[in-house]
Amino acid sequence: MIKILAIAIIGCSNYNYNILEAKKQHEDIKVLKIKYQRRMDVLRGRISLTTPITLTAGKVIIKTSLNHTIAAQDLKKRLPLKLSACRSSNGYTCMTACGVFDPTETQSGWKNGDISIAGGRLHIFFDGEAASKKHWGMMVIAHLDETALEQVRALPELIQLKIELETV
Image 1 (tube, one colour):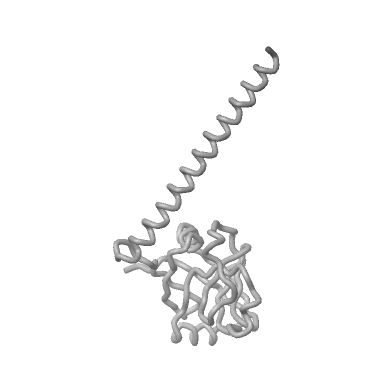
Image 2 (image 1 turned 45 degrees about the horizontal axis):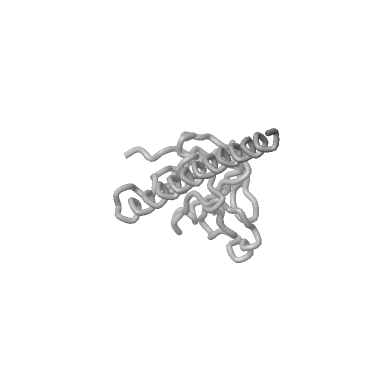
């Protein structure tokens, strides 16, 4: 009698585990469907791919757009931001709060003009693209065009950077 009861309890717990696994798989499928639908909406032009922002350093105003990544959308929620940035050999770095991101949206390296956020740092890259492939986990959230890139290269060593949504 005790053996039969033990088998029934074990069978019951396996059944509950299988139900929980099935629910988790169902939730995973729902998430994939939402991501797929979002990508299709972007491709069909139903939702905007970018969010216009301005970067202001002193009297220099640079316009660009945040992309559709989760990290970019997380940063958008925190705007406006005022940050202190320091120039390095390949760009400017600012300390900022860590945000959320999707690891599948990261890449290795950067292109000159990329704006990246990772590990509590916001980077504005204006150089070093050729040697950047060894840097993995880059979360690019925006890109500067060539004119804006030249404006960034002309900025001084230390800047106060204001990032805000562009007003229309």
